[in-house]
Length: 174
Image (cartoon, rainbow, N blue to C red):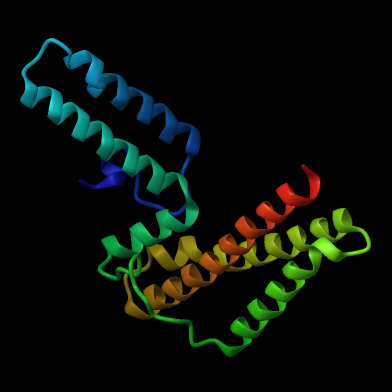
């Protein structure tokens, strides 16, 4: 199943999330298992499977990193389950520094201001690595796709930092 085709969207990193949700609701109405209550067990099972596939497709296309990985895999470069590490020493050093800063947030003199400043740093990194992805992912040359793969790997780090920051915020402010 091709996810973009399923939702009637042009394959692209930049997508209209409202349109995605509209198509999702239409698809769910059409194959919802409740509509198959009086049907055969096989038809019920197929409806459940189709619903699960639609949900998986939605989750993939809604999330920027998963969407980028999916587009890359559709072009023959699958990094979704890879164990490869980044070979960018400057980026890795920056990540170590950010992790140290993240660990120090709870003991900051003004945790709220420190969290806000850290969030700003994450937003800058997100923009930095996301900005060129649309263009890189629309290319068909291996060099552009490999650059896109590296940007996606970096974005994964950024999203992990964002998740960890969210957990720290929950601890600090709840």
